[in-house]
Structures are given as C-alpha cells and as structure tokens.
Image (cartoon, rainbow, N blue to C red; front, top):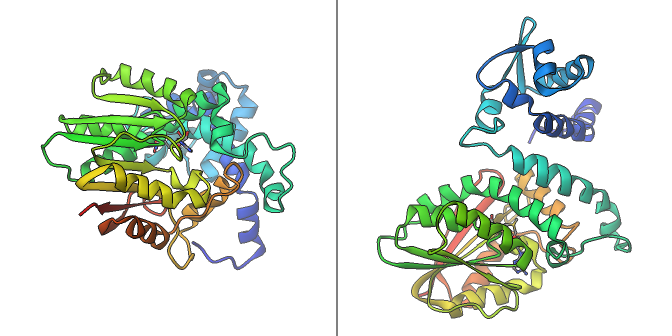
Length: 337
Ligand SMILES: C[S@@+](CC[C@H](N)C(=O)[O-])C[C@H]1O[C@@H](n2cnc3c(N)ncnc32)[C@H](O)[C@@H]1O
C-alpha cells in the first residue's frame, strides 16, 4: 500500500468512494459493454447507454481519470482490464458481483459501521447472515451476484486442489449459489457435491445447477451450517467465505464437525479473506474483514495462524496454505490422517 504522506493522499482515500460509485454507475448503464472492443465518441456513447451527453461526459471524465477508460483524441475505449472483467460477454466478467452485491448491498450496509463499532445496533436491519438471508429478495440479489464473483475463484481452486480420479464426495458448507461445487463438478467428473446453506439461498443455487445440467451431481441441503446435521463420509469439506460470516466462537465446532464427517484421508478446505498473522495487511483483505463486521457483529477477522490452530485442534494434519485471490483471500487445507 502506498504510504500516506500528504493531504492529497488522505483525500484520495477519503474520496475513493466516489470512484467506486463511478465504476458502479458505469456498470449499471453498461458503459464497458458499449465500448466492447471499439472506441466511441461521447455522443455515440451517450446514445448507446441512454444517458444525456453532458452527464455522460462527466462520468466518462472520471472513468478516464481513474484509468478504467482510455481517451484518444475525442474517442474513448476500455482499458485492458475493463475489457477483460467489466464487459458482460467476457468469460472473466464479474461486474454483476460489483454492481449488485457491492453497490446495492455492501455499500449501504457500510453506513452502519460507526454505529456497529460502538455497539449502537438498534435500527440495524441485519446483524447476522441468518437474518440477512431470511429476506428472500436480499438472498436472491446476494447469491446471484456472489455467483458471478465466485465462478472464477472456484475454477482456480478446482484446478489447484488435486483430488485425483476416484469418486469424490464434497460437502460445501455455506456453499451459496453452488459456484465452487459447480466448478469442482466440471473439473472432476466423478465428484458429487452437497451444498449446505440457508433455504432462500439454496433456491438460487438450484436454478444455477439446473442451468448447468448438474442436478444429478450437485445437491442441496437447507440449514444453518453451525448446527445442522452434516452428511457423513465426505472426501472434502469446503468452507468458502463461511468463517468470516459466522460468530468467531462457532469456528472450532465447524472444524470439529468437518473432522467428524470426513473419511480418513479426507480434507478440510477453508477459503476466506485473511490478513497476515501479524495483522499488517494486505489492505483489501483487511478492508473486507472490516466490511463483514456490519452484518456479522460477532465475527472474527481471520488469520492463517488462527485457522491453522483450529484445524489442528480438530485433528487435521499436514496443513497447507496458499493465496487464491492474491492480496485478498487465502486457502488452508488439512488432511484427516
Ligand atoms: C460470501 S457467501 C459465499 C458463498 C460460497 N461459499 C462461495 O464462496 O461462493 C457466504 C455464504 O455463507 C452462507 N452462510 C453464512 N452463515 C451461514 C450459516 N450459519 N449456515 C449456512 N450458511 C451460511 C451465506 O448464506 C452465504 O451463502
């Protein structure tokens, strides 16, 4: 992270929310899609996005200023990364995750941060994931957009874990839309998965699994993962972004439940936002942990050391650790001897 050395550096951080909003607004009116592989003048871009010209010019000026777009004379084009990640047709697109989950849910929730910090929680709509996912509209918006954010990391993790060619049973606790299970099922033809999550979330996941034609291999179980009766004889128990969304004191039981239901030689795989053991960063992992506080009041910020200890206490050995989304998320996997 750049050192903060001047008032300008502080301003850049303080007003950074305006840049976030420029990005989200551009996604909503599909500026990046309108510039898919070609450059346009302001007039043409305004018409393509159905935005008055003078407003488009102000938006585009800010997008150029933060390098999401490039300007050549009077024409505008996507930057390389905008073209790869923010155009809806791109295979690596994750703009729906940004414009729905981050802009429509996380962004307003962060208004509560100062109240939550000092424990003034009256009037706060959701204090836990369970409260939040009990609202069907929120659960749908959250899970649909999470899907767009998790398919990429799911594919990377499926490649990284070597599960072999044998039949594999995967339990995906807090598995949400099933994005990781779907990517694992695609990578391993002999894998069957059970996704455990709240009922409103599961409805969304079932639709995604049906779209992929994977209903026979990816099933769902409604429930609260912290007290549900987990199915036994698993080869892998995956918990992706679950530890940061539950009360910290629920984590030892999640690890011991994983140990109880895995067969010998089976694995626990935990993927989450993690800061270094000395809490020195990285910045995006730290900020994501802060953001979780507003709807998981009793959550702990995860470090690899904390998770490693909980896994070892539960009985797992041979614990490995690696980054999944660099600078943001990490994976720890352990084996049941
Ligand atoms: C950020 S999402 C991640 C979903 C999925 N694991 C992924 O990586 O795409 C966190 C998920 O954990 C689920 N969750 C949180 N607390 C839970 C609990 N106590 N029991 C079951 N699911 C839970 C949420 O409903 C949500 O679907």
